[in-house]
Picture 1 (tube, rainbow, N blue to C red):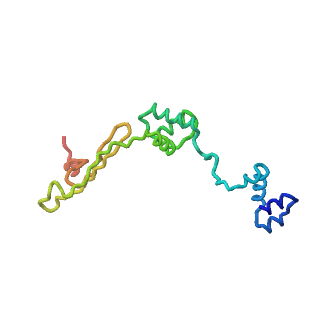
Picture 2 (cartoon, rainbow, N blue to C red):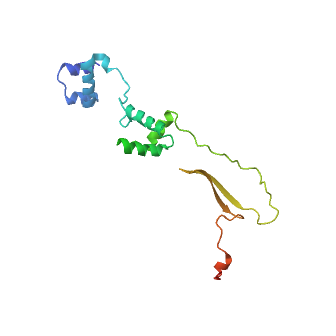
Picture 3 (cartoon, rainbow, N blue to C red):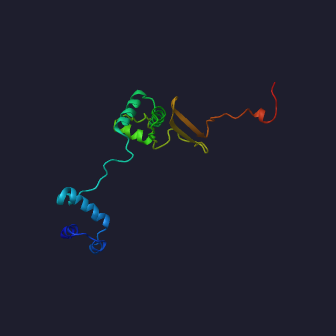
Length: 172
């Protein structure tokens, strides 16, 4: 502290600051604080940004929530696109999702949970009777929820053409 007072009493030089090991930018920042708020201004203050540089302003946030309440059938992605098109203000899908989640407007899809059994319901009685079948439950936007069946076994999904057409025979 005495070094600061000594440096402010008379013209200081770069040599003095170098001896003390204080960068000039730091000294001038301290000196400006001292001139504006005296010794109390030099107390340690944890630095934090005044404002996040890319934060969506509150009025825009309110407009996004209004749009989501008006258009309940749109996903966060579709809401982001619609808002960008209508208002000419870009918001990302992730930002819309976080905003809607903060307002508890994101609902989890109604999944049907099918658990694997500990053993097969239809037991095999002969070789080559065990086949693999995959079911996937997925949502097709605008249509609803559907099962996708991938079968590698007994039940054909896409039937093959009749055999007589494959052999080159024509039927009248």
